[in-house]
Amino acid sequence: MEALLKLSNIKYSYHTLQGEIPAIMDISFHVNPGEFLAIVGPSGCGKSTLLSIIARMLEPEEGTILVHNPNGSLSYPKMGYMLQKDHLLPWRTIWENVTLGPEINHTLTKEREEKLLMYLEKYGLSVFKDRKPNELSGGMRQRAALVRTLALDPEVLLLDEPFSALDYQTRLSVADDIGKIIKEEKKTAILVTHDLSEAISLSDRIVVLSKRPATVSTIMEIHLTKDPDKPLSSRKAKEFPMYFDLLWKELNQ
Ligand code: ADP
Ligand code: MG
Image 1 (cartoon, rainbow, N blue to C red):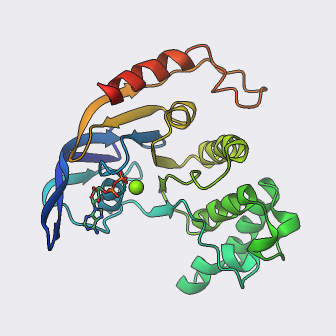
Image 2: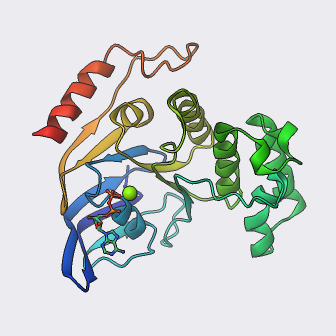
């Protein structure tokens, strides 16, 4: 299988009045199509910077990103972004929020509307369709934000600590939920998080970054024995504590 994205020797520094701040040193890894990849690393090490480079919002100083789209096209995959804050517009209803992207792009076809209605139905949001975001719980809002992101049919989802503003209980179930939705929709996902449990429970592989300037300290494949009928089954897998220990040591060495 050819990698969807192949990052080679990516380097990035911020230039400030106080001088140069090297954020990313020499980062290489690949992302497989359909894979759920997590990136973990200490706070301030350069994770968001790396995601912005993958999204092509920042241009790397050195290094390349090669693309191999499985559909044969050489174009850069379409990216959807999900952040810590849901950024739902408070004056628009949930429906008006999830249709905003296609509306702006003039691509809100009947077909797309039907797909969006299906997403809302499938992910338990239909009843909130005509409500305003402030009438929804944090978890529901984050789900609505995901549907809004899916509305533009991204090939790759970039998730920058999307659950960290939620309280612990909500966070567990929303992370679980959103992980399932992304798998069901067969999207490639790159999740940045500083929460090791979240990374282990959601991803196929984890890239561990060092302190700033970030380099790759290790890349770990995750294989969990899950009972799909149980809630939070990934976190209850017998391999979970072993991965946690390995990652913990890697981050604290
Ligand atoms: P992380 O997401 O891992 O917490 P970031 O990628 O946001 O880290 O930031 C990496 C480093 O770059 C931090 O030390 C931060 O202070 C610095 N940094 C981030 N954005 C800017 C900026 N716009 N200007 C200057 N320095 C920045
Ligand atoms: Mg960040």
